[in-house]
Amino acid sequence: MSGGDIAGLIAAGVFALLVLLLAVPILKLGRVFDEVRTSIRAISDGATPLMDEVTATVSTTNQQLKKVDGISSNVSDASANISALSSLVAATVGSPLIKVAAFSYGVRSALSARKKPATGRRSR
Image (tube, rainbow, N blue to C red; front, side, top):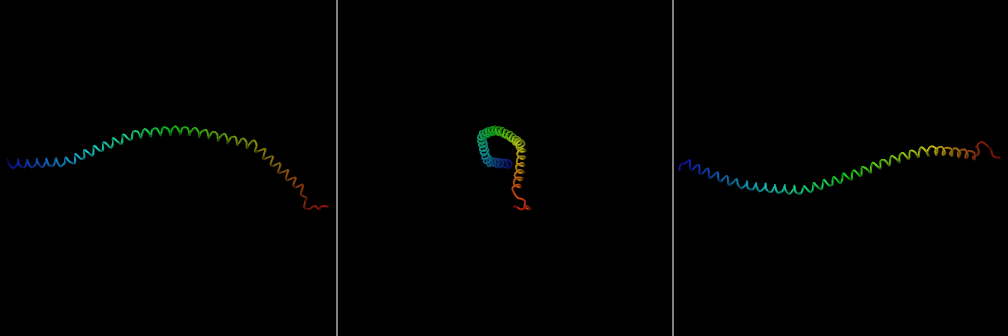
């Protein structure tokens, strides 16, 4: 054996040792990747029913909001009708009532002025 053959054997041995030393972290990294894949699969298996529940909840919420929208539009119509009715009552009853109140006030004032004696007159 020559010096080149011995150097080649030493280089091959060092390369084999390097491969063995690097094989351990690569095997551990492979196990980490297996665990990551298992975790991702578990998360996705758990997320699918959760998304189905969220979809059902959103659908139910939309149905309830449609009902609330109908109720609020009915309340809006009712309040508009009540407002129109109160305006009608105020126009129909309010004006004559004000006139009657003013007339009765005038009559009371006239009667009270008639009952009081004038301050300048002397009673006999």
